[in-house]
Amino acid sequence: MESNTSFNIEHLKGSLNNDINDIEAAKSLGNIYYDKGDAAQAILYYRHVLDLNPALPGVRTDLGTMYWRNENLSLSEQTFRDVIARHPGFGQAYVNLGLLLRHAKGNIAEARSIWQQLVDTNPGHELAGKARDLLKETATELN
Image (tube, one colour):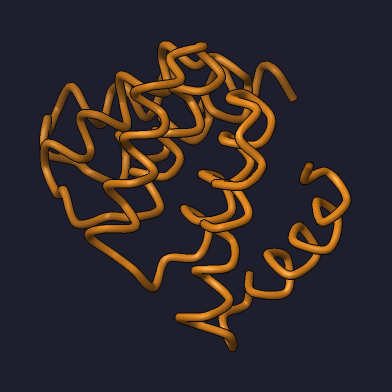
């Protein structure tokens, strides 16, 4: 599988070298590096995608996750909050921001507030159930 991934990386880099505006190639490269756990490379390609089209909440959320993996907590938090501000219906940003606040920053109360915001504003969202589960899971962690 590694050789297939290497082939895909080289193919996508070739596509991007032929057309610097090939947003799908850049996004695919970011996703491959995300899956490989290579935060620095994923960040590079996700930022390029967002330079081409800043209105992609999934890419921006993945960028925030890679910032977190790269231990840049402030930039990760800012990125998740930016997604929520720009795309309030994008549930994954709420879930990720809450997880960051809970696990990396130890702020359970604010994490719960973010998850509750998703449940309140979009109770039918596919991730509202996940937010409800996280709210239940963390109810006993409050002082």
